[in-house]
Image 1 (cartoon, one colour):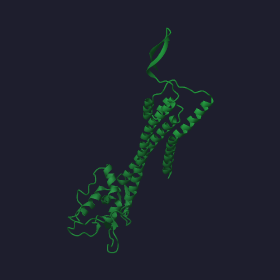
Image 2 (spheres, helix red, strand yellow):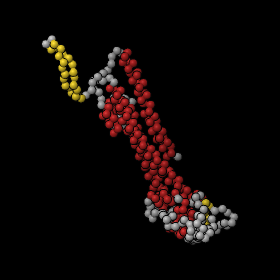
Image 3 (cartoon, rainbow, N blue to C red):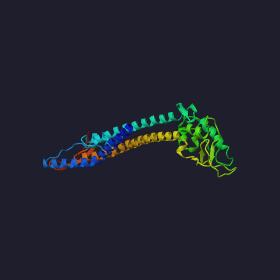
Image 4 (tube, rainbow, N blue to C red):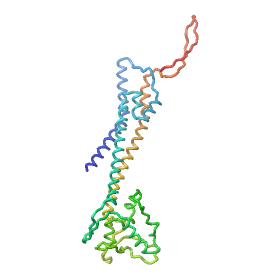
Length: 316
């Protein structure tokens, strides 16, 4: 609960800053309008004698949000909003990435990196990992031999033999890899003493029937004439698997939040670059010259004659 509140607070703060950036332009327009009215009332206008380069401002803010606005007009509201958003997005991206990594390590450990004492409720106890490939392969061999015409063969069962990304994804994603979970195995494929027996498959297969597929399994020792099988895709098969899936789901959510922060970071750079052009244009409204090489043409009075003239100037 505490972690959820922390995430919610962080997201709310980031959204608050984002809304601030959206409305900043409108607020700044009002600020400039009030400033212009005040200038007119005082009968003088403040003039900037050098224009700022909008292209330079855009490049600066695209690289470092807010720097172009600072170059053009450090008093602009967005000069400070975009850097704050930048810090917020970076912090959010790092935080959720670390949370995702932490939860990933947790579900990997839960699956097959820690020993537990499993009790089948009938006096049998065993020290084991929750998911074991050997258990999976033993039950696979039973299912592959049920019917020579069905789909269950070596191309159907392709669980990785090392603890990689695909392995941890497959044991939670695909129902036909449920056999390795301890609670499935010792409920459906072992007797009360933990000895391996052939599972009671549903439906009862017909010899060489190509339409036969595994629909479910009966718990060991059950009377199949009076109870329904546990369907192959039901979480009743393995509460351990359900817990594992929930852990992976929480991890994936954290990674998705980190990707959202990454997207927001990219958007912040683009938006800051575009806003720098706006801030520069607004600032240059009160400029009467720009920097760079200029030719100036004019007429001058020389020896009582009007003579066309020009000069070359470079303002820096």
